[in-house]
Image (cartoon, rainbow, N blue to C red; front, side, top):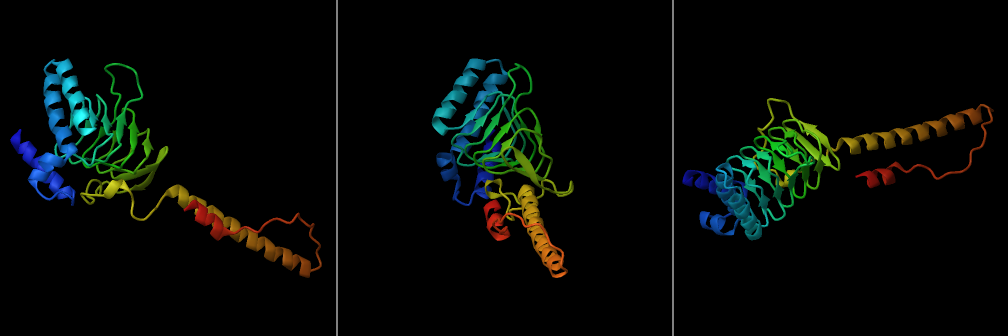
Length: 247
């Protein structure tokens, strides 16, 4: 037990540049307190002391602002940063070395008792602030969930998912999955490579190119003496203005 506590403390100091020493982590980090009290609640829950386990979890929520059902399974070196508003459901499973930021919900969408209702996070997953992961599916090892995303289907290992509903921004090769930086602030990408945004930019540029080509063809036909039917005057497409709205 004490070796695991030392491991959790060292993990927080390693991942959070604001953590200065062991005493500060032990006394001032609600994520550490929540994981510690979950261990007590889980011990009671697995030994048939269901009410006591729920009561300890309830006290932990009052003290830390983090709600973890005693039935949830949490691996080693899990870091709940800031943590306020985090909700982790009964059948949720969190693998080793995961990072969860404030306002995250690992929730269920089924009312069937005894069923796997909550998500499984494999090792090294990062879930950004305010994200909601809803359902009994798996988030693959090393995946990242962007801030405020709503995830309702599985995310492959090494991928980054953003948006509502979430879509895959980037997927690493299998050999790269789980080998990224240990700390990725709020699970966001550094290069803004949103595929939907990319497609929209391409469509806008294509429409602008077509507009320019049509104007050239109209001028060429007019110079050849071929009359073209006049179209109602419309505002010319401004690709720079539209692209700025997409960004």
